[in-house]
Length: 447
Image 1 (tube, rainbow, N blue to C red):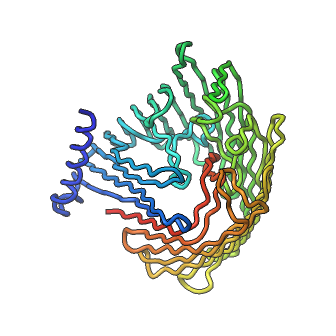
Image 2: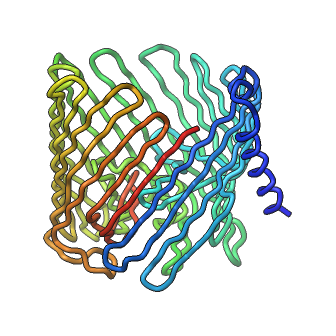
Image 3: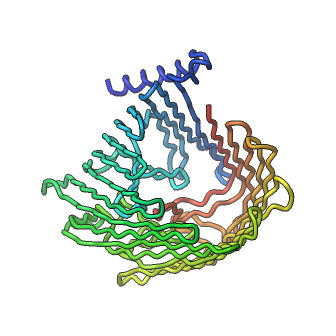
């Protein structure tokens, strides 16, 4: 019955897209939009193909809106081919004068993610989707969020998360606030196990600097699946950044210090604080560290809008007996050699407990106008190991070429070459992925 109703909703949305005249679809009372994100993979060694596609449509009728996502995937592994299709998201709501009431599926992040960071990243194939109710308010001097939800994707358990966030803006240059999240995790044989998360933050900004500080605390059950362990565990974390501007120079500094902040466990957590480096690698996700402390410092020299040089240095160490570390050195130069033409040259050197890796990149782009452009990227990676963290061998040297074409409401990206596997990271979250060698075509269309 549920599957039938979801299918009917999708058909209804497609019918509106096709049959409603454009002058009505973009009128004052009714607006219809849609987008399709598709990827095609062709593997060089096995000659196999994989496909991932996501279609999204949204309908706004005055203050009301409704939308859904339909997803189709076909991935080929070393052992089998996995195919799935489903309506992955359904949502509806009402919004007026800064107030939004939303029901169904959604993503939610509180501030910098120290106590809540439910997001999606297709590059690492991560999807922490929520399903429930939320209330948002955005006004001149106050913002707030209230929600109650469960995970919107399948898992071993179905925890219930409830949270509230408040931000006060008394002056243009001063903002402060806090948030609270409670999670009830059904545990087999022990009933509900609770975790409480709270944070406070403040931001001061003007024409010369921008300073942000956030402190979070964790109190509740720590659940480890493999090997199974359940105990009450306190933890805390601090994140801060400072940027200063003067003339052609910008300096910035980021700091992190986390200990037992993840909940409910290190393997699947609902909070992912900033990793504080360019490659978004956290020691918790990469090596299973229960805590880490580190910083990222750098400066940008930009004499005008078209030219700039950036230098970064990041360092992090684990706060446990494992002794893991990450050191990253990043350099970038970008410029405009003549009107509507841009180029970027970057160099990224990463050193950590398992291996060293260098990632250079060169990109050049040309813009015909605001909706037409073309960009060409050439890059690669050099590693001192020929094995990634997964079972497949990866060459020490990999190269690629990528073409990005934007025309009207479409983005076409064609990639050919090699992309190193192992731990692929985004937003401080890392997953093991096999090395990809072949051709990948991505098309994003908006209607």
